[in-house]
Length: 596
Image 1 (spheres, helix red, strand yellow):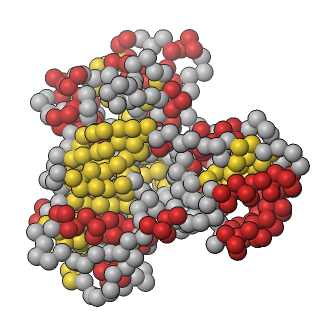
Image 2: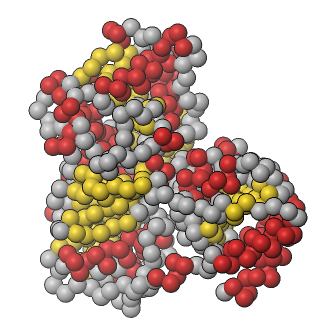
Image 3: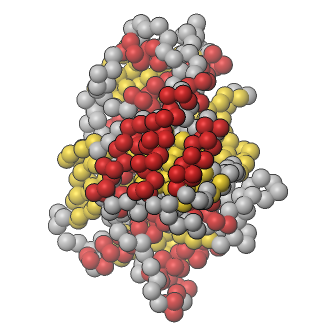
């Protein structure tokens, strides 16, 4: 096996607990404690491991202000052979595409590299775009959210990828770009603080002058950040006490007063409007195979926006539509369908869509914020030079511009992202948009294309382990923590049944393999917005509670009155979960018929 030259790309981010906005509405970074993005720590760790195992070298690379030298130095101290900091005032304000372009220049001139490792996403922004955009710019294969990785003697990578609701096994030839999942390996560490004194010659700084004219930074960024605001969620923190039966009775009264048993989202349902007569523009929606729930949301949003633009809504259906008929896509908002046959790998689909955009340029292009959607949209954005906002939670059209509202820092911050490019793109978090009532069905116009299979990634198997939108569309969710062993989960069945609730969990539970990753809620899982969330034996770590901020009402059950979860709950029952559940099931059964 030949020695590998590995690049580990890392990002410096502020710690969540000290996040604050300045008077200008921007995120404060001066004087704020900074650290390496957790996913990047896995990329660095695996890069060091592979380089050492093959007798090769690992280079840690970061783009950022001079302070980012700290994460590069830390990476070298952890075991990387050298470090590169890309830093210059000219890079300030870089969006993901401008960042990927600068990184691509450094990698091309500093290589050749056999493997480029990036974190699955940065937890401050959660775009997951730099990896696939970089792969597109470098013309390399890409695998996302890699949780298992084996390097064969023939230089082929055998990877297992932890996608949203599925496990994908694939073969990826080198050179390649890989994004690392949280569970791929232990994070890189510096065990001996004395080793942090890294010789200056091991770290090189690259400026904009070294990379050429660009454009870089704001000038090279097709998206820009507008107004931002912190979303402060105020919980009642009513921690109950006394006999358990009294706590349950009081909790029921509070839940009813808060309308926690009602699905408030159903009260605001709209209806998909009719097609725009004589359209002069196009809004395109990328439809992921097997993800009709997200397709319905995106087509509905596009149909609502279409009259403002005078646009036709085109659904780009990538592969078989399962049991969904063309008439159903029309009822959800698609005036026209562009059906892509055969090609099923994300890279091939992206290349076709990018070519299609050159001949049928849409004003806006939307995709689901899933592993599939992020790669396809990111590659299209890189190939067309388009502005892409990742993981949006709301879409608007204002002054001839798409406005995508994007959360960051676990949902504590939301920002309006706008684009200056001709094609304005967004990936949208499944479940956050409403599903308008369908319009009368009819057959849309259809065009069919055969997609050339040219990707070097070979998918060996794809196994779905859950439904993607199960949690995102649930109006009631019960979350379980490490305090409940998996053999006792059946004791919760009666509660799930009486509430019509779905089961969710924390990172530590999925780490143990007790529940699938699709059920994980939090920064490294998914965010949910049920009307009622009940956390049972959940400790309340920040990673998890960020994912339930949008819940209408949060009730927690924990035997420890000092448990952190109570700080993030409206109602708290202090008792053993096994004693509480039967009483709650009976109380729910008595109350729900009259609450509907």
